[in-house]
Image (cartoon, rainbow, N blue to C red; front, side, top):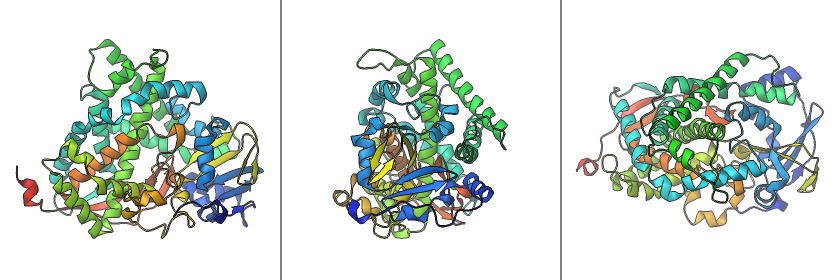
Length: 461
């Protein structure tokens, strides 16, 4: 359904009942999605007043387009987002603004053009084969964590594409550090809302800092080792060799560490989540699942799938796109205007926290028919012409659209096509999405592994 801003009303009132402060903060720490007002699933813009401060939620696609495309220079990454990400990611592309961001974007964007991404598809397929071998060694009916398995697979791809399989790092330790860091973000949000300093004592702060320090130290060591060693055909080397097309300048080691951490931590996490949610949704719809299996097998999966075959997995990509609609890896974008602005008739003061709640926009009652239903046909080629470009923004939009979008979508399609013809996953508990920078399933999507017979045509060499 195309956007119609007149049909999406503004609501500029405080919530009818404000919860006691301590209960509110406990909920924020547990899962910020639980304190989002119901109005953001039906209104175009909503102003909430709490603790003497205003927060503006923007859901109207026309207003989102204005913020992200027409007037991006009027908005900075919000203070809350800086608190959440800058301790680990420094001043990389996700956290920087202005000239610093533009320079890094110019340097790194050529590395993620479609032709460059295609170079890494063989490593993606090889990592999916290794995951398939791990699953094949388990008995039919074995209990697994879908999230853990997908995290392991995408970390394997990180090792192959960023490190050419050479500079081994402790994958479990790195994964645990990322998990500790992300799991602490609820407290960061609560402290920001109370206007307390970042160093204010809180549960888990010591582990948070240790995780941050470990992530930066390990990544810094990788860059330093590569500077001392031989060149390799991987993304670390590409980051080192990349130059600004306007000035010829390279990134310094701190900038390289900041951006490598962004891609290693955020990149693997978001793709693993897209896969986890995709497998969950497919487990609920056998007809859609079988169509994905048939498409994969027609492309040569599981044993003869090629990079060209991955590029042709159109329906599989529709499934991933719909999974990212229902469960966007990044549940919200946060901005602050640097000057007073007007959005949909609402005057917004400079410095006000503005949420673009992607999770709510993707399930908005005025924008989607049956918004909570799983329907990959929403992303059939012809359907896109009827949809406002900015009612679907799993990778953001405008100049700051996620640079790794093509890499992530290709990786997800390749892994689905490799695994689904061999295995089914019966999810054993209704998942609860939790916002911890990314949208994670609480308890990691426990599932039962089922082996399936690979089609004879796919077995043939």
